[in-house]
Image (tube, rainbow, N blue to C red; front, side):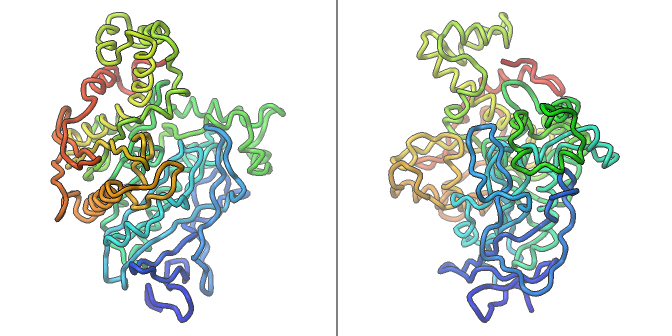
Length: 504
């Protein structure tokens, strides 16, 4: 049966390399969806903490009308819902309006955020039908999280000589991109025109994938929304040695553990281990030969066009956990002096003033957002421009409305996908709808051509480097001067290879 054939019943049929699937019939916009498609074998039993393995082909028609299981969620940022979780979670979802494989539409592969601890491809904020209606194939990816995705141990290293351990969640993403390359035509997509895009941890993953030698030929464009190198106020990405030290503690409360005994534990037991929140990407020497910023600085990243940016209020959700004191001006200044040195404190206070406790608190929020998100996102853009020799388009999202009272971290995502879903605030107004329509068009234009500009949209100039013009994503939609340049230059001036040169 040909790809995307209409079924006799209620769904749409596509033929993947592993077998035939039936998805949901096209909606009013002509977009069919296929959900819960496995892109790798379930990483269970002896496959737990191994690189993703090939899918076993099936016979007959596999149902692809519902999302698959969520991957097990970590507790690093608070309580999570694992009622729908399973280790058998390595699935993708596809939305397409193509009528057949000859359409060769651009493909956009979405990586969700969640600090590499939580999140799922099935979140209603990033369902793909509205983007797909603008002439692209949208694919969203589940990947392993927390300790199940990022455990590093010497015994795991010995199981896979030369591969190293600790980056299974990123290897899942690479496997998903390979699945896209192999199966895109089944959904009317072009395997040679793939854009990888993500937000927060998903954007950090984009930076990691760009920096990895394992991703050659898997994507031709990249979009990073609020993220780049997976760095924190505590420093750059963990080394493999540091990750192994953490991994050695897994289950240690009940005595030394072998990999066999750890694999015999239930997923709930593993995820409940008190060391679990520390598990996240590390410089493993295989997926990442060096930290991403260093790879970018040396021109060893993927030479692809990049669209990236930040939100005006990145810091609010990170301030409480950043480790930066903010209750009093004196504590804030003291911590900054220790971090940056007495000789730099005057310059620091020009950028992050603390003349009163209230002002110090505002600066602490701003600094938290800069260190967790904004400064490295800015650094990524400038390095891609300088060493990647590719076009870069930068944005600054600052929309406010009853629906979006503050332009905080993640708040731009529903606008990108055209999914202004209820969020506990007010209803979206006409300005929100208009901005969402423009943003989704910018994103899909970029996926099509490597340039976000198109008919009916205000012009978005290519980024020219520090202090350049960016696209102001707000009402009104307009070009604007880059915000935060001096702050980002100050913070990034402390970089040495593999080190941020300061920590709180």
